[in-house]
Image (cartoon, rainbow over all chains, first blue to last red):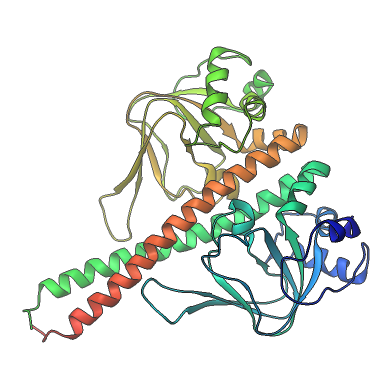
Length: 194
Length: 194
């Protein structure tokens, strides 16, 4: 299966290919990381092993930006970090300097939002160190949905729960900012103009 | 199937039951609404007919609050509005009065976030008129995943794309508020204290 995908799908990410095979040590590690609390702990190890068969191993060289905020063409993959770290940055409207949101290490899933909804990339991700990862392309996800729909349904449910967590976090932040601007409005209203 | 769910699952929502059967006019209408642009247009009509077999028809009386923000017990269902309107409200931190976010009519899906991630309800939904709807419980979703995993995978993918859209919208708002507070900080900094 891995070979099949390897032949069918060209690598969506810059960097060297790392050859691997189903059942290899690397695939086992990927399956174990896929069910880590930082990734998709709702899956069983057996499910994760099925998913990993649809993923491509990939190396990303340090400094490579492999997902770019606002990019609406290259949205067709997510990746699981096996080794190394990525910084996630976003550009706040009218700011030039991006803000680092987080640094993600082994067991992190990156890019699932673009994979799911195919819309423009949400943030910019850059390899802070050399990264070894496993990539799931949209084409491979559709193949998984055809060939192993039960595992696909569980995978997508787990990914959407992750997106849900992010929606709840961002909404919490938004509420804080709404409150903050209300307080600042009062502050501005209570002072004389300069 | 509908009967089976009817027997197995007690109604999660206050209001009268409306008896319906697979292939009825009401089920057809529900299937057509389920693939409307406001709901899950990624599904085919055939997929939607399968999903509807796992949904329960339900009536909600005007004025009934059927989802309550912060409720972390009653998260096990989403609904498709067939007829009528619901208001969606949220309480901003430290405010007493809730803010109406939106009013949802026929063809709207409500409560999918709680269904997917099982976390506390995100907003409060109240019937602004009498509502006829079709409910999908978590139990029924799991049954769909077992019995029709391919349709389940497509349904969950469509639901997570909806959650993704909301995440992107809220993030856009958050960025605007971040910018606004920066401008207000400057405004406050440039004025003498009262």
